Image 1 (spheres, rainbow, N blue to C red):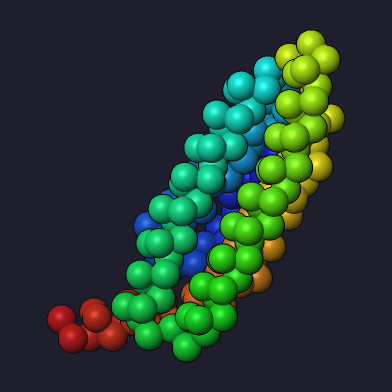
Image 2 (image 1 turned 120 degrees about the vertical axis):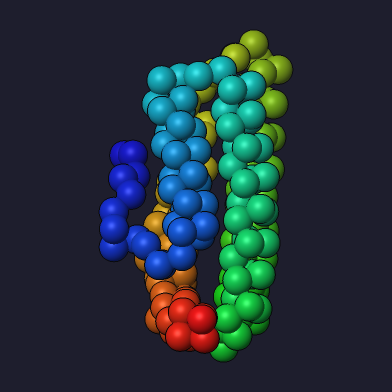
Length: 150
């Protein structure tokens, strides 16, 4: 099921919210490709796009955490590392499955990616709605103090 951006998902920072929207768009593309039985090459390309954008997003988010003095920064960044590790491990399993299918002459199999898609969707929603929401009051205070300073 495609993810729809909702205002409740906003952490109150336009760049981070924009990143989250872009990640949702990439995931929705991945889901659409998966559901429609796209060739493995298209799924791999979209997954690589997601992985690259995730790295960029995590770097931006971590820079923001340093800037605002986020007290849970180390814990949050460790969660980023754990998530990346989980995603890469899951992708490796599915890549091995894909390679086996390709050796049997199968060019697409949406079932091979269905579980990976589930992990990705759960990760994104859980991370935004639980972990990133903890940033929101700190972002708001930082923005208010910048406005007051003038």
